[in-house]
Length: 265
Image (cartoon, rainbow, N blue to C red; front, side, top):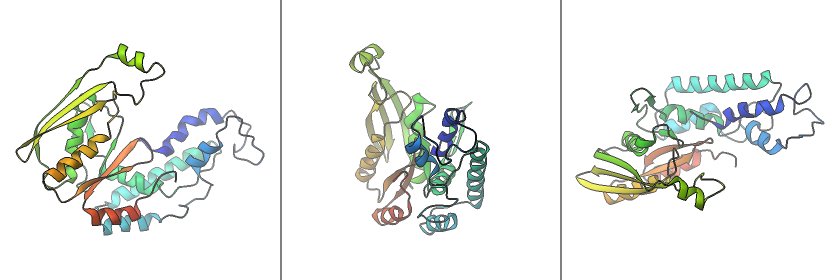
């Protein structure tokens, strides 16, 4: 599970060579130009959320919307935040928790599921939330796992006969067309086929290596509408490089929009 707070550990090596004491001490001239990044990651230094809900209010709001939030997940998320804060303080740094930190980390924890790296099997941990990293470990079964996550949160989404195949991957052609970088440029096509309610469906998605093509969410929503499902997938950025998905009708989405924080706004 990846989260923006964890990124701070990647920049510590850049700041530990600064003069002794807190690198945010008055008079620090920010020689590396890390000010904006610092503000994004660590905030103003306040302990609790700034202008957002408290932890207790966030949990209550999700539960009121019908999203199951286990007490254990709440405790584990708070312990993780405390542990990261302690690690950051070891370097003499100051961190201010942002309004999105707790709720997004909590939802990630609730909906992440359990992936067995030996067998490649993924087991859902929630029927209300599906969270996943957009940089996927199992490239060849990326959308098979995605469909499993969708099935976990969408009642009646029982699919069969799923296949996915990657075609058109040509490294030489890609590097010729995009000489500077292939990041987020399509490297081929992934074709996903499956059966739902006795109807065959096919999705053509851009192949980005180990990166998930987010248009798969829109395509699934089109299929849900075509098949007569009453709701749609509701996707949110988790503040790192992952996505958090819910399922519900427009009334649910309107209530969800009121309580979901937007990172870095």
